Amino acid sequence: MKFSIKKEVLLEALNKVSKAISTKNVIPVLAGIKFHLNKKKLTLTASDNDITIETSIPCDNENIILKEEGSIIIQGKYILDIVRKLPDEFINIEVVDDLKILIYTENSEFNLNGISEKEYPSIELIESKNHIELSKTTLKEIVNQTAFATSLDENKAILNGINFNIIGNILECNATDSYRLARKVINLSTTAEENLNIVIPSKNLVEFTRILSEGDEKIEVHIFNNKILFKNQNLLFQSRLINGTYPNTSNLLPKEEQVKLHFNEFYDVVDRVSILTSDKDKNIVTLETNGNKLIMKSSSAEIGRVEEKMNIQKDRDLDIKISFSARYMMDALKSFSTETVELSFVGEIKPIVLKSSEDDTLTQLVLPIRTY
Image (tube, rainbow, N blue to C red; front, side, top):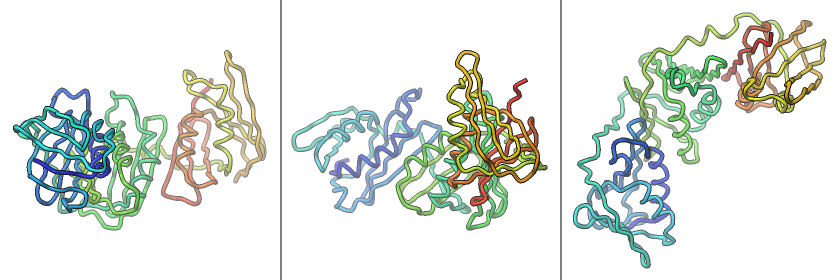
């Protein structure tokens, strides 16, 4: 294998695939990036068995000058550092004596030990005949508005992921850690041939959206029994799925409504009132209404107490009192892109539901905390 490549093009590709490299992996070869060069393109692949990322660069004599085809595994950490720090516009890479890698420019030369591609595990990145499509913007919205609500508790593995439930042309995405729920519902441009109910690890989806380039092209989503493949132009991202049955979160949404409050600056009020709360006490704040006045307060025996009042719009002449986690409430409020958020209260022990009149695709739910 021998070629010259534009530094910025190679660095962009390396930055993408390197997200799949794990330093903790027990299989040494998976600390490397597979380089495969033929007349058409240079393909880079990295995997940690949980996710696999592949991207390709066409051999167009502008970005890559091909001299000899071949394949090799190069240690991910070192190739990334070398390419990042070399100042030259073009970098030359050559395999000599089968497993020796020569990386050089006019004034620099690095010699690395490579690994034979035969030692790399066989990874299939296949596409299904039937797939759904999402725009980049839509997928990023789904992840930004739901991923924060997934559980970090490894003993609740099924809640570590985002649930994708597809029925016809409706995609319902749910995330919960048992104390809150984030739900995003969108209409797909095509109708799925069969209903699908899968759970994708939240951290993998977050990683994928981070490496997506700018623009709003369509992303193909290919779903299999135990894995999911996302395809965007020359980028392939494959993730395992979490086994198990996701809980029926529809049961969490209250069927009855009691009081609705409309807010413009609720986030700032919760933020200020939570200053004197602590994580060990779940950042508890209390909300109560008195006519058209809202009173928010928190207190800590070690720190002190705070109280703030504001005028509100209320759809019924009923007063409420409820306590909740300020951190969970602020996470939910941040997920809305609209200025006005509507909070619905059923009672002091029923979930608080957050919605926006300008965006009916998103629902957030926060469970109250008993303070007595």
